[in-house]
Image 1 (cartoon, one colour):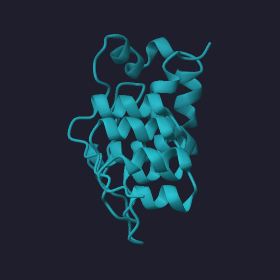
Image 2 (tube, rainbow, N blue to C red):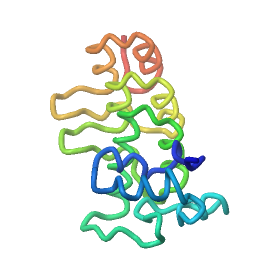
Image 3 (cartoon, rainbow, N blue to C red):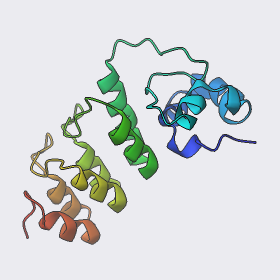
Length: 164
């Protein structure tokens, strides 16, 4: 039996990006999930650090907790994992939802490019900036127009930075 928290576990996204982590997925997510430190913390309604491994050890990384959380955020957006995005926003202290990646893409822009309307709405509810520009000078609104995401064009047009 698989863990009931797979859909909301931020670490689960990392399994898709790093095949070396599949061993964790096989052992804990698809098997002994009651032994998983992440599962236990989640069940106790405690915030689960993004860098916490199922065995209770923390991932040692040159990246900060915030940088790691941003990586997970962007991965969750591209995979349309709304519950994970909600969890990251709720439980990751210090995360800046307006932070951009190396291409100047913000979380809002990534959600627009993925045509993830529910995530766009969630980010707008959390007051992300709509006027940020990527390395090509495009805002989230511009990307919605470019990709012909009519559902997002009208949504973003009502926010600061969007214009018809």
